[in-house]
Image 1 (cartoon, rainbow, N blue to C red):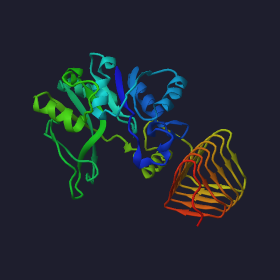
Image 2: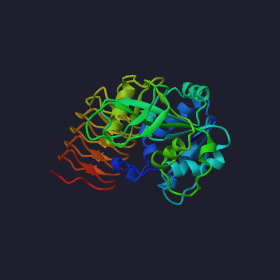
Image 3: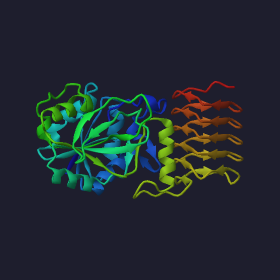
Image 4: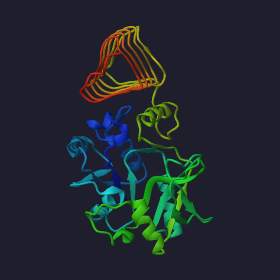
Length: 339
């Protein structure tokens, strides 16, 4: 079984974290977010994966070289952004002639891919789309299907908060229905490919499940993913709370709350308090500082007595001693304005 994993987005809503690191390569506890995606695929019998991205491509290569075991990774270079559908069509030559999974590389889920594959085969589907039920579909748009689960249309985002099924970003595709599209073109899978397949009469089905699902599209969702992993909400994933990587220096007088993740090489000084936050590798927090509800990227320095709340600081950024930072985003390599 093969899969195409979409990792080409620029992650603009995640900046400044994604100024230096593609969103799928941001750390989730002890590994990259993409590692969790690939490990999940391997557990469901996927042995080959195709990746491609025109954004920060050079950052992916060390990741690929360092990863071993299932699934094997093939890389396709994109000269420009091709969209969700274009990236999949561009990978067809590597995906083979059998049905394959295609999915977003920035989704944390424990979706039962084996059951999805069985449903796809039983229904004789050309396309099966994983669906997730939400109580408020305004941010996503709705997918309309009949009683048998066959999808009739994709609806625009509703103006009012109404419940419904949304596209969960995981697909099982028969390559036959994609052959008419031109590799190298920019194509949307939702706006272009799926409506065309439905109009052609090919069976497109939804696969609704109660699986855990979270789009890591914002710093708030990124934090929530860590919190949910701490609470055991992601099947097959378990971490102690708080989670502190090997080699972290934590002063005995520091306080780390339950929902805290600290990456390797970090240093936490005396009288520091950290709650509901994620600190990447090499972060240094000076004596008496307070960090709550925040994400500190690699090698960030927080000065003594600083207070950081509900903020995001990019790689190599800093917060001056005694500064107060609230609801702020600090670009990579810059110092936060003192206040």
